[in-house]
Length: 354
Image (cartoon, rainbow, N blue to C red):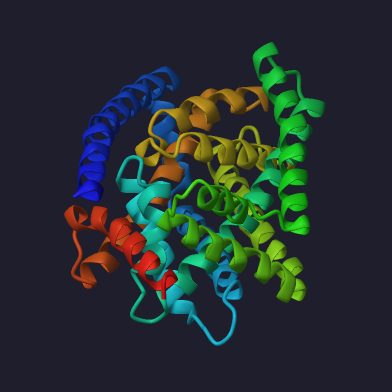
């Protein structure tokens, strides 16, 4: 009953916030599209034309490399077929893109939950959590490199310059802390469990946290030969993203051709926007604002940046459509996918306690 009340209270909070974020995003989207010029944006989209198929092909590579990374994070005797990993990723990402505030609460647990008939849920969830750690480290390195390049190569407004400096200082500290934590195997869950037991408390989720902690540290210790290939796969994700922006700009901005360097900076900024505004469906409005402003700094027009953001949305909508089709094939609907994360959480707890 308590869990049901908690879930109900979350829905009461997230529902209005989700609607508010969607409305705000739409208003921002309309504002920046109008400011950049509807005609110029339409012209850029026309220039892209069939080149959008190339954009989709490159974006498919991003799905492929992260699916392969997830597969590599599984340990024997468990195995995951590529098609199962790929479709689970696409379905989970579709849930995260469509439902506000679902990216971390539902989207990631849903991926192993959606293929639990092919892979034990705890094994799949642990593997995708490990993959997300590697992905997070790669994002930190990528963003830090992009901010450093932006700071050194272009004249920035004071606020953006300060933000870049803070990013360049904070991210290495975060990376170093995570690497030190893994290397030293600091067991926070075990220490917390001991503290609670000394006070006569027995919290069930602590046992699950300890089991998960053991899997994370155990993977690092048992699979040192996989660490570099995993980081290379995650780097491939960012390389494909940079290539996607380069190709898109080559079509839509013939008057100001891109370089791989400017595409690299734009993709690093896109990573920041994606992480910071996960709760906004399709990053509506904020992507246009951020990409438009950075594009001006990189000597493109604001319309070019807004067009780039809109094309990214079209790409995301394509994969959302694919994900929803796969969900429908499994007999699920948007009304039911909110329960997937809850089912995953309950199943993980029951498996961890065995």
